[in-house]
Length: 147
Image 1: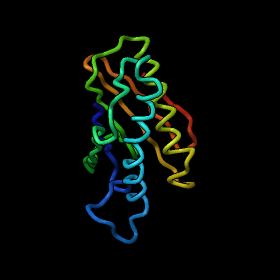
Image 2: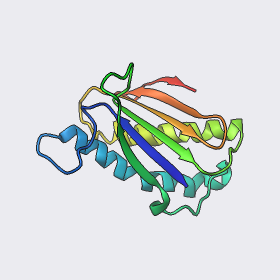
Image 3: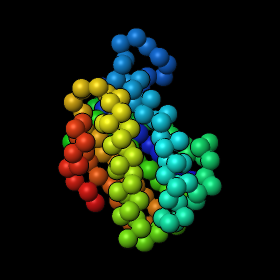
C-alpha cells in the first residue's frame, strides 16, 4: 500500500478549502488527486515484475499534504514522498521502480502542464522497507539528480 506525502513551500501549499487567488495551491491538490490512479496503473501494469502488489486499489493509496517550515533550507517547491509497504525488491528492481515513478511524476507535473509556464522545482523520495530512492527535477522535465 503506497503512502504519499506531498510537502510544499507556502506558494504551493493547498489551503483547507477552495479560496479565490490560490491557483498554484489548487494545482498541487489536483496533482495529489491524480497520484492514486497513476500509482495504481503503475502497480497493475508492472507490479508483479517489480515486487509491488498489482491488486492494490486506488482507495489504498493515501495522499497527505504538509508545508515546509518557512525557514527551511533549500526546499524544492513540491516534494513527493512515496512509501511502499511492500518488501524491498532489491537494488535492480528498486532502480526500475524509481525510474518508473520519475516518468509518472514528470508526466503529471510537467507534461500535463498542470502548472502551465510557472517556474518551479520538484523532487521525490521513494522508500520500501530498506534503502530509499528518488530524484530532483525542474519545470522543464530535466532531472537534476537521481539517487
